[in-house]
Image 1: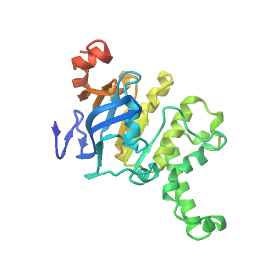
Image 2: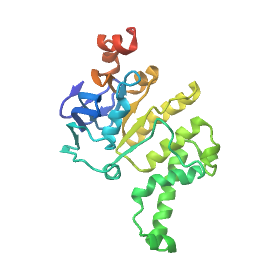
Image 3: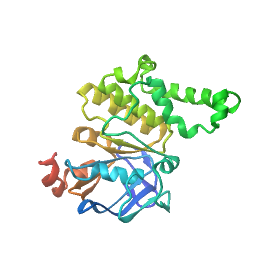
Image 4: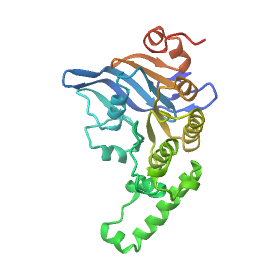
Length: 272
C-alpha cells in the first residue's frame, strides 16, 4: 500500500522508501513543439519506476529532464527534498544519477574493461601530474577503481570479454557493457533508456534478471523506459504512461493495465 510520506510495500514484500525525486508540472518545448505538457510524478527510493508510451510520447525527453540534460521551460525538479537548480549534466552525475542510452554510446576501440573504467571518473580525484607519475594517491585510486570494476564484471557475468574491444561484441553484450559502465559510477538512481531494445528473447531474460539484481542487491532506484510490455509489467513497481506529451496513467502495473485511457491509447486491450 502506498504511503505518501514513508513509501510503500510491494506485493512481494519489498520495502520501498520515501520520495527521492519529484517532477512537478513539467512542460518542455522545442520551438513550437510541446514534447512534455504539465506532467507530475514522483520516484521513490528503491523502486523500479517505468515510463511507457507510444513512439513520440515524450519518454526520452522526460528521461533527459530527469538527468538534467534538458531544462524544462515550466515546472520544477525536486531531488532529495530540495529544488534542483539548473546545472550541467556532470553536476547531476555528482548527485548520484547515471544512465544508459537508447543508442549505445561506448568507445568501440577500447576494451570492455577500459570502457567500464570510464564510469569511475567521478571517483578519480588525483591530479594529472600524479596520474602521469602513477605514485601515491593516483596509484591507490587506480587499484581501488579496478577492483570495483572487476566486481561489476563478475556481477554481470562478462569476465570472458573483459579484454575484448567493444567494437567486436554482439549487440546484446554491448548493452550489458553499457549497463556495467553506468553501475561503475555507483549511482543512487539509474536511468535506463530502452535497455532491451533490439534484443532476442534470451538476451531480454538476461538483462531483466540483471536489472532486478541491481535493484535488489545494490538497492539502486531504477527509472526504466521500455517498449516490451511483458518486461515492463514483470519488472516495474509503478508505471507512468505518456501519450503525446501528456500523462494519461500512473500506478501499479495492474492499475495501468485496467486504465481505460491507457488501453485506448497504447495497450489496445485489457489484460485480465
